[in-house]
Image (cartoon, rainbow, N blue to C red; front, side, top):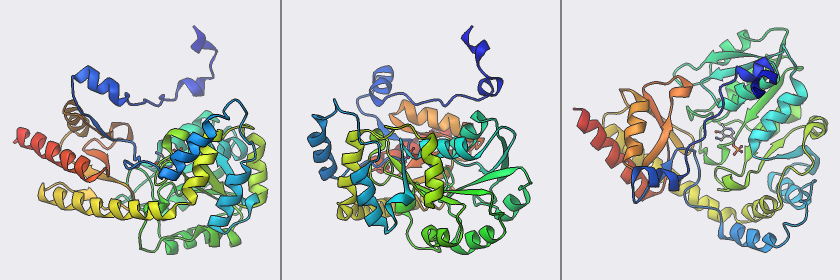
Length: 366
Ligand code: PMP
């Protein structure tokens, strides 16, 4: 059997279970319409300018992509007001998580993460043979004091999802500043800002400013969420050029495909379109909150485009029943949150359908 030749630590990892394509769910359940609110995608789609750029670039896919992402790098550097050599691109920001661990964390080293947090932090660490130290959230927020206590001489990396998935909350500027002051400079602080564009107000940290003092910070963001390019896979990291130089040694040479590069440039140039989406998502988040309050269901107020909901009964069961009625949400079983579901904020009509279906299911129960 081929698995006999795999490393033991690889066999111990629970494989990521992908959801079924919408078309397959429709076919299997005999449903006419299915809505997917499970992967925190942008339901409105990318800027029409990005779609045009993809069409323009399509005829050139016989060529390898630009391994240095020249135009994307220049455009993004200007947009963020950073130097081009402070940037690295990944096949989704997932790939940057993997690259950082590959480059900085060895077998037996320790990685501190929150629990629950984004699953890839743990999976990628375990692939490299690192020991993961999970620190429980308190009231769905990072317990940074406990994370400091979890640090040992073997700690090499700390992950901060800001805001994190699945809770949707963030560490404030004041909390992060204190935490960095107390963290050894040889520990890599990975700050994942995948949902940064959805954050409005609050004391959200300016991580670029912090990077001027602390060279041990890597910030990642993505074109998958707000920019609606999840299917093209492009994310980026911002760090000191020396850190970027190290990450580049483990990066595959052509990791960002040419359609993704062209589309990402076009997205950056259409900020107006995305400001409109941020507004819509904000309004729809309020709609969901009102409806959930009306249904008597507690939820975690979110700074993102998803909401974690306490359904006050078995969450996997509720997710399964929603699925049979054509509404796909995220079952929280693999995060150990047995009473919860996570729902992505969809379009107005998707959210109405989700709420109506959820309320009907809970009524059935009564
Ligand atoms: N970080 C967090 C917190 C996420 O939720 C996700 C996507 N679910 C990612 C990173 C990765 O996104 P991508 O690889 O598409 O950039």
